[in-house]
Image (cartoon, rainbow, N blue to C red; front, side, top):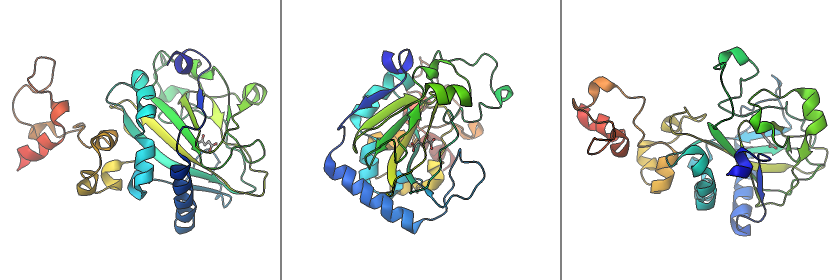
Length: 278
Ligand SMILES: O=C(O)CCC(=O)C(=O)O
C-alpha cells in the first residue's frame, strides 16, 4: 500500500493469472470486438477511431471476467486503500489495433474531468484515493505496440497532467500477458501508439470506494436476477446490496443507520427498500 500511495505510485506483478484464464479472456475479447463495433472510448478527442476498440460490461460477458475482476489477491491489495466495501466502477477491455494513436495523458475516473479544476473541491489532494486502476495485458505489452506510459510518483500531485512534463518524465510499462499493473486513478498515464503489425489487448479495471457512483451502471447493465446468481464477492463489487441512493420515504420508520443500530442499513442492503414497498 505504501508503494502505491506514497511511493512510486504503481505496482507491477508478473505472472499473476493462469495462462488458461488469460487465453480464454483474450479469445473472448477478440470475438467481442468483432461482435460489438464502434463502442465509446475516451481520451482520444472526438474522433471515430477504427484502430481502437472498447468492450464494456465484462462481468456480464463471461465467468472468466468475473473471476479476474474479483481475484482475491487484487482485492486484498485494494482494500487497505479503498476500504473493505470497495466496489467495481468498470471492467472493460481496451484493444489497440495496428495504427492506433496515443491517448491524451490523463488521470482516471472519477477525476477524469480534473482538467476543469473548478469542478472539483479547491482542497482536493492525494491524502486518500477515490479509485484504483488495474491493467491486465492479454498480449505482450511492448514499446512498439503501445505499452501504457505512466509517470512515477505523479499520484501525489492531484492535478491534470501537463503534456510537456508527461513527455519528459513518463516511462513505458512493458509486461507479459497475465501480469497485473495497479495504480491510483490519480497517477498520470496514457495508452500509447500501436506501431506494430498486431493488435494489443488489455483488461482495464477501475475500483472505487463504495459511495462513488461507478462508471458503469451495473443495475442497468446486468439483470438483478442474474446478478443474484453471482458470488457474494461479485455481488458486493457490483453494489447489489448497497442501498444508496434510496427513496428514504420508503424505508421502515426506525433508526436503521449508525454504530448503535442492531443491523445497519448497509448490511441489510437495498433489499430493505424493496421489502418496505411490498
Ligand atoms: O490501454 C492502455 O494502455 C491504457 C488505457 C487507459 O489508460 C484508459 O483508457 O484510461
